[in-house]
Image (cartoon, rainbow, N blue to C red; front, side, top):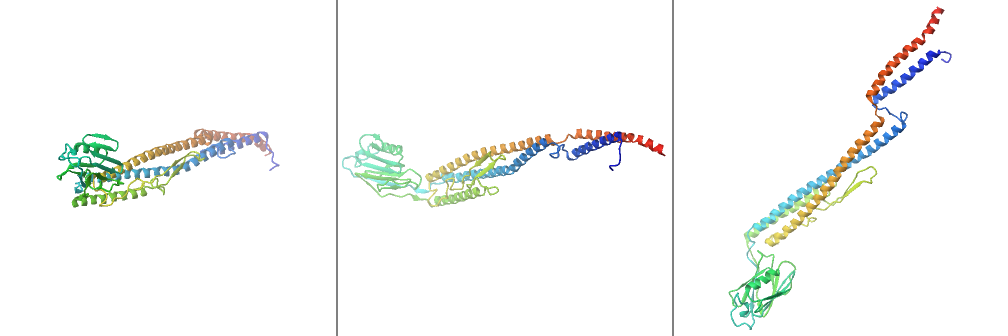
Amino acid sequence: MSGIVLSASVRQNLLALQSTADLLASTQNALATGKKVNSALDNPTNFFTAQSLDNRASDIGNLLDSIGNGVQVLQAANTGITSLQKLVDSAKSIANQVLQSSVGYSSKANVSVTGTGTTGTGTTVASNLNAGKLGGSVLTFKTSSGTLAVTIGSTFTTASGTATVNTLDQLNSVLASNGVALIASLSSTADTLTFTSTNDAAAQTISSTGTAPTGEGVDITATTATVGTVNAAVADPTSQTTRANLVSQYNTVIQQITTTAQDSSFNGVNLLNGDNLKLTFNETGKSSLNISGVTFNATGLGLSTLAAGTDFLDSTSANSILSKLSNAANTLRSEASSLGSNLSVVQIRQDFNKTLIDVLQTGSSNLTLADTNEEAANSQALSTRQSIAVSALSLANQSQQSVLQLLR
């Protein structure tokens, strides 16, 4: 082939035709792939910049899966808290039924105190307790919160932990103002006061040991007076059966609180059973959110099962349970607010990452994607140019054809 000699015009047209063919191939490749930069050879700067943008978009896209799982974990915990709030409300309803049910005891705890003094010569009456043998007596009431010493005298004075009273009304006023849950009345027996529990059952007991009780109750001792035998509250069987049934219902709800908290998991993560959740928002790991879990079983909420015959005996025990349930409800509301705040943050970052991926991919496309309209126009132009080049090559060969005719 090296022996073949082409004229200058033929060689020039051949080169032009080859150049047009190369451009046409490049244009067709851009139309086929949709990209004007397919390799580093096409445009090194745009190619590697676009590749970097695509890589970052891919890394952030991979994080979206874990962020999506995190959203579901928070949703599962929030669903669990909603159910726990309903269960706590149900338990409150049961405790309120105790308050509305009949009194659990047919008679309340009581004890009589008989005066043995010699200073009083008259008859003990409500308007003058000092007139009879109760005169000068000192009655000491001990509770878990303090001690009150009441002297029966001719005047009325009060101080911290002490008082002197003359009438029955003054005595009951002093007892009430010092938190001693007893009411005094004159007994049919001469010179005798009867102290009766003001609660509706046996949550408060009465003793005469001289030792302050550790829980509900009051201890009564006296000087120049005799404290009689304490009469315990007498249970009402029908009422106690009703209250025992309410205890059983309450315990069922408490068990459901524990199982509901244990079931509030997603993909093995349970924020209501002590698990923690860490979410990473960017490809470097420098942007993250740590969400600490809580333990919201019955124990974690400060609740426990009750015992029939011990709990729900009266309004005092029911109100104590209601107080614990109210605290549990407040705890649930606080955690629900915290979860809602964290869920909002995660969803915002999820939307941000989706938008950022779109920005990165758009930037990459701007560097590498071809303009199909332009490339289509180029293809048409190059096809026309190729046809012209072929015609020009044919014209360039006509001189050699003329020589061929002379030779014939």
